[in-house]
Every structure is written in C-alpha cells, then in structure tokens.
Image (cartoon, rainbow, N blue to C red; front, side, top):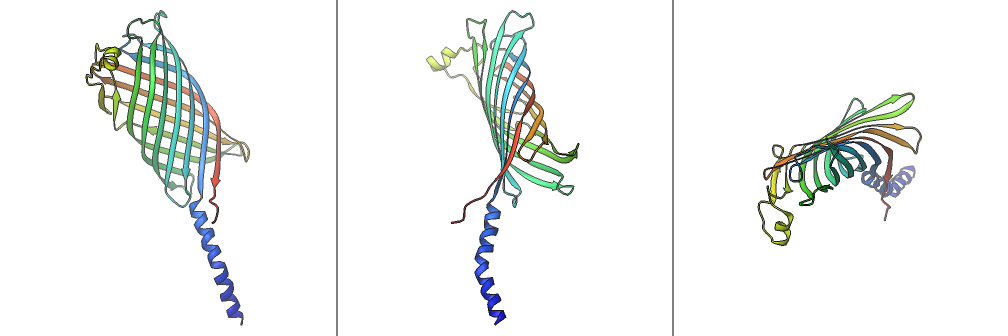
Length: 270
C-alpha cells in the first residue's frame, strides 16, 4: 500500500519538478549599468582643418548584459553618446564634436578560481553616427561621421571583498576587425555628393590598418546595499582613420560614475 502511495506522489510531483527545472533554465539574469562621464577630447579632421583641437567632453553610457545561468553565452548591448567642445592650439577656432555608438554582441564565459574570476570572449557589431562642426569655417564647415565595424571583444571580471563590501573589478577591450566607413574624398564637397550625386569612393572598406580603434572600459562595482551598487571607472576610446587621403582621429578619455542593477526575469508557467 505504501509503495502505491509513493508512486502516486512521485507521478503527481514529476510534472511540477520538470516545470520548475524548465523555468530555472529559462531564467534570464540582467545586469544594467547607467553612467555619466567627463574628460578630455582630442580631435583632428584634415577635411575641416590641419589643426589639432582639444577640449572637454561629456559622455553617457548605458550597458545591458543578459545571460541564462545554465548557459555560457551572454548578450551585450551598449549605448554610448558623446559631446565635446574643443579649441585649436591658438584658441582662435572652435569645433563641436558629437557621436552616438551602439554596440551589440555575444560573449562566451569561462569561470575560474571558484567563480571569482570570469573571462569572456566574443565579438560585437558597432554602429557609429556622429559629426564634427568647425564654427569658424564658411566653406565645408561640417563633417559627417558614419561607420559600421565588427569588433572582437574580451572581458575580465574579478570578485573580491574590500572593507567588508562585495566588489567587482571589470576590464573590457574591443578592437576593430573589418568594417565600412563614409567619407568624402580629398577636395570633394558635400554639395557634390548629395546635390549633384557625384560618387567618388565615398563608402570605404576599413580594417585595423586603415581605421584602428582601441576602446577600453575599466570599472569597479561596490555593492553598498542589497539594492544599490555604485560603479566608477575609466572609459577610453582611441578612434583613427586614414581614407581617401584624409586623416581623422577622435580620442576621448572619460572618468565615469553611475549605478548598476542586477535582476532576474522568471518566465510565467502556462
């Protein structure tokens, strides 16, 4: 009789156990970080001027990473916006530089040192839209920036305790592999491109050689309470290109600070 009761209970609970296991497998853990930054900017665009421009810039960075604990792969999305006001060395000309970057990629993780160290490797696609506006130029005062890159990425995260607070140090590095970039040709005006339709090699394939880039993000998370995690760090992006006999570089260095939140999305059982 007892055996029949046990079999009945097992048969009754088996679907529930399977449903719970399936739900646990589908749980998505999301880490979201929102930061603002301030720091120096260095701009050169020989289409507008042969001068180097330096100034102060501001950034906004929103990072979202989603992963299922039962799987090694995660999805990373980053939204980055920058705005800088720069002057030439003689302080006789001003340039306004702005850009929006969207990064989307997939990363595979390896856990080491009993889970304290996490290494991730993968790749991201980067879409960048921006402009440089020279306030002193009457002819060709502005330069549009548009490029699409495929970038290998590596991330290292380390968990530790400091002053009795859980801490996470994280370093992220991305380099360009290949892409395409919009650029006018040397001596070509935007009027020729868009009004007269004179195409002159204005969509250019790029690589690590013709358009090198070094983007890195170093952060430290301090969990000060169960609901609040403060993130501080450094965001640096060295972008350069040499296409159509024109040189351009945008170097940005930012001190960033913001908040990080980690939460789980549990699917509802049907």
